[in-house]
Length: 227
Image (cartoon, rainbow, N blue to C red):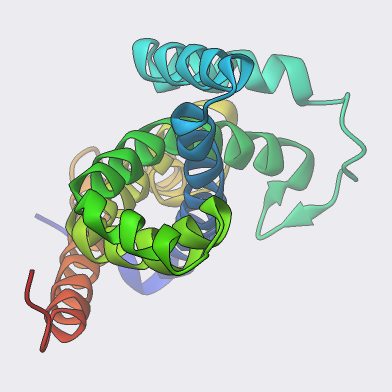
């Protein structure tokens, strides 16, 4: 195998990695925010909120993400007030809709993850909070959610790793993330396997590093905690 092309084309992989990380971080942050709100809507006693949350979760989890990306690009590109500015080679008017779609998809999974974490918290915690005069919203914010986060951290970490890998789907709509740039190197160098192996190695480093960092954080968070 010949990897000498890296001396000339390594900027493609550096840029692609940066865009992939940007997509992953942004979509995880907004996906988590969306997921928490959708979860609270699903647990709400207001029927329309529960209906909306159930429909949202079922649709987003029941259709392929790649199909959602294609539909989202067609619906949003040229219709949102996003300037056609190049950001690391990628048109923002396409990058932002792509991140929105992945965030919405991730939010559906995070909602179920958070719901399972909330349900795992002993109901006695809520009863104790109510007896102290805390309102339902304050109980959820200060008592239930902090404990639920500790319970769901491994699942949230898995979701982050999944988002890193799923960001490669955006290469199909012209977003210059890691896989797209690896394919560009393929086309330029006429090498079939080597650029993809480099991209695979970078994806592995990103996901492995993320899993190790999250494992250490989970261990630190669990110190001195007993159910």
